[in-house]
Length: 565
Image (tube, rainbow, N blue to C red; front, side, top):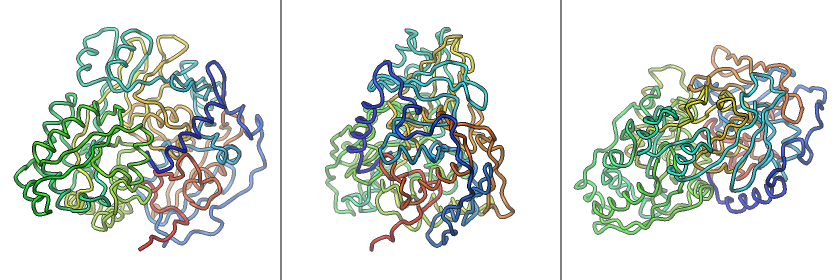
């Protein structure tokens, strides 16, 4: 999601796309500058990254990654990680061909010309209109049902529903709250609900006044009627968030629940902060529908009204372009309140809590607090369930006290499809496996989501629409059973741990090829992870250069400069 380089990186992406594709033309990896020749494969050489194990005092999870032989990878960790296999399943860890990365990262072509191993391969991106993927007939697994998948997008739920009703698309993401009943009552359509594994929150960056004052943050936490927002603007099945992590996730709701709505207490805190008469600020958001935020503009307006009525806080509303907003929030550049949220990438509290509150790559809340980061680090490295639960009690209570944000809602959401789409499903992680669906025997499956992908290289992205497209093209060591949050082997036949869960050895499937014909080997796995892990790696470039997911998954990056006092 984010960063200060957003404007320039989006310009680069636009220029790349302009050079790579136009209506009716193909821009797949076979046409990429510097791409590997069809079927080329250099002799395998065992490698380690780095050459000598990293001193674990640097603060990250990884010590060394080794390609032991052509199909065997070893991950040496500094600490046990109970969620390691699930973390490998994130789209940011889709395995890339080493030669292709070397040829296409520096010139940014990787952002627009993905070269995965998945069931679909990239065909074209007609800017502002659609992306077309075509079936990978050389795929090593079960072939895609539809010959092509076309992604379209609209920020308006009404427009998405009209397209589905008109039959111009086969499926849509996130119907509006008022559309659930309409779809359920239409025999030509099918509505498939998702579990609410998400959270919407009101964020604050504590490096900006007056949010640098904990009493102001605590006042806002108690001065917002979160139940009113959920009751009036969220679909049935949504709930008020008493914790940042949904309670359906094990260890998600340890500790004390969030503050109750109490205007009197909130006003008293503002007075103690010297702001009895309120203050002026901004409310930032992006006009993109998410399961956690079904109607951003309406919720922003409601928040604006509540702040004024309850706390005499005057807030103007500022809408930012999606990529710019995400970059700015992650870089800690939003000097007001902002509406944002998170949907589960994997069902573990580390996905919610470590990414947001123990991640040096994510500056969105400002200065981190040791009362939060300490117990989160302990929980993430603990295999014993009782000890993990105790650490999450401490962490959640510290988050409540420190108030980096206000959790508002766990939003119910769904996808909707034509009735004749066989295999239609909603992923609880919003990673619908479109290759498993038969669109009524038609050659094309057209899916309309909420926004365009920010780029097509997901190593350096966190945006949901972007990840859904990558999910059809690239593959990870472990992945998800279709329509579930259950981890299962992907490119790896298996990954097994030693007795202390600090060494994981993964065996790759033989004969897997990238879309350009290059053969997958263990060296590609090492390079994929090393590019994200090491700030000094020559290919640590991406779109923003932040590789933000890495910090939330695996802690401090290698060669991170010491923090300045």
